[in-house]
Length: 427
Image: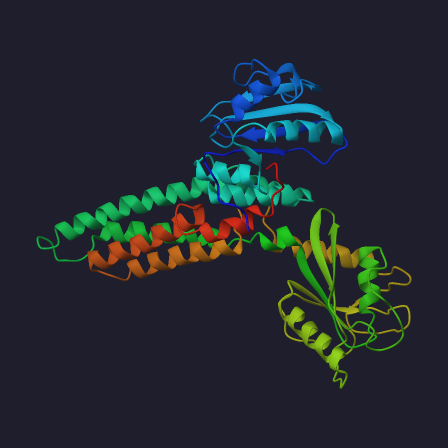
């Protein structure tokens, strides 16, 4: 578990890639960042002005390196605190010597994973949705993943939530007025208030119904299923263009779930090879078969091989996976041996996958954000059915609280350790 943010501490970490490298960036943040820098680099440049300085180890006066120093003063920095960045040569010994000298300064300690970003969240420089988007941006491997993560890390969702929160506060104020004048009116919520609540609920619903971020972040789950010896593992290997699954003529070779992440035309996929579906007295194989059934149920796209009747699934695609050995089989003809049909199959997969993914820079929610937005929308739907302004005001409060939990204004402390644990030390 990550340590809590200590506002009296100054943290230090390597923020660039692991050495050796041409350049390394070492970052410090906190109340003693400037003093520590002056002890090592002498007089600092003005804020946001880069200068070359000779770094001296205060313990013995030895030269550490010649480095570019860049400082950002609170509150106009990434964390909201004083920050100093050192751009030095990227050798491991140089980086270690600089960090060791900084750690020797009063009040300086090594940063926890994601602590720079956590401090940015604590100071209000970013909200929770931007931090989550930044986490996805760091892990992005395809252009689609990068663009989606950048939209959230850049504050697009934060702006939408801030607008909705402002509207909810205005609607709550109108409900409070209706409560105050309930004795003079007919005791029901004004028609205009109800109409505005309904309009806002519809607006939230459009985002809640949009494609979610999980298939983009983790890959569209393509489960390859069917009876034993139907060619499942061979097809997975052909799509992955590598020998990832064991292939033999013996039925039941695959006994566990095998996950293979790939990207096709920039679209991320998670290929899942499964055990052949049949009745089996083998305890180990039976476990694998049960896992295969669960994977098939949870698939985004289900590739069914073999002549057995496939399960009902909205993403079903039947594959005749041994078209080089048989004629007239059901489904798309594909051969892992000759390559027949593979291009057509990948084209179909990417076409179907794109319908499950956010388009371009379209805003997308993860499961946590989606569930909370659905909670807010449900509160608004209940509000429009009520006539008592007191009850309407309560539902508006519930809706606003859910929005605040999405952005991190309330009730999210338990999420932070897991979130920032995905970050590197220098982020």
